[in-house]
Image 1: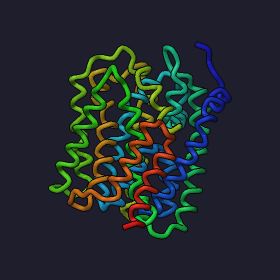
Image 2: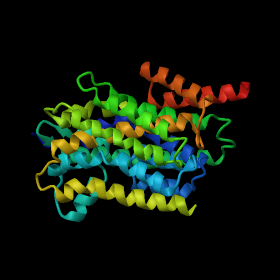
Image 3: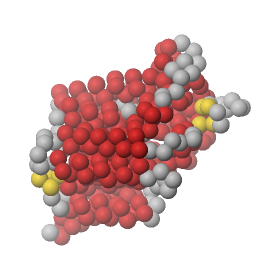
Length: 238
Length: 102
């Protein structure tokens, strides 16, 4: 395969940037609305750098959940990066520190854009992921500033923004006609969460819903796991 | 506020470790398909549970309020392939309008 350049990665990411910055800004606004410290929100974007997990923490804490529940939901959401990181592992070079730092630029979008026949393109991943990192953090900073001037979150309907956001992130994962297991996992997961809400402390229903992933054992084997999930990502945020 | 920083710290460290796992440990190996098939479903299951609890849970009760209407509007926007930001704004505006009218 022909090795791309950082510039190729940056160019490929450019069309997604308005959406990324807006998404980062919405994280900043909703974090402030949920009573999260401005600095904490910005540190989180700089270190965790994974949208859905960050929104999960903010929404669980905002709904009165414990730290354990918020952390559990976020880490379980990010568990999807384990197979993605292993798939892309061969592309990284250099010593452990360099690998660790460059691996942080692995997010859904950079992973999908750098996916090539038979492997991943490191330069494209770093270029695309680097630009996304800048946009995500700039957006968060702007959102935190805007969020400071908000009055009552409920009046603005911001509590309704969270379920809408999670649904928008979920929808592209369910569009495959060939494999209905993600849809089944989503329905069972939502069912478990609703069933447990009246009887368990806040946050527990979301963690317990992960039991739905056991449906994976009923799944047909996929010929190419890399290709199978790549296109959905760009749809998700653009 | 301590709770927030605890979450920021633990989730940050865990995510950094997760992302570095492959590049640091792989050495040409892939995650076994049997594991990947299950791990792949964590995200849809957790996201769906977040949708359900964020829309219908109020403390320990299940309720139908303005958030449900916002979610319905968001669902329509998603079916119409609206961009993410539009989906979120549609939901917020729907809930805000219903509250203003009530």
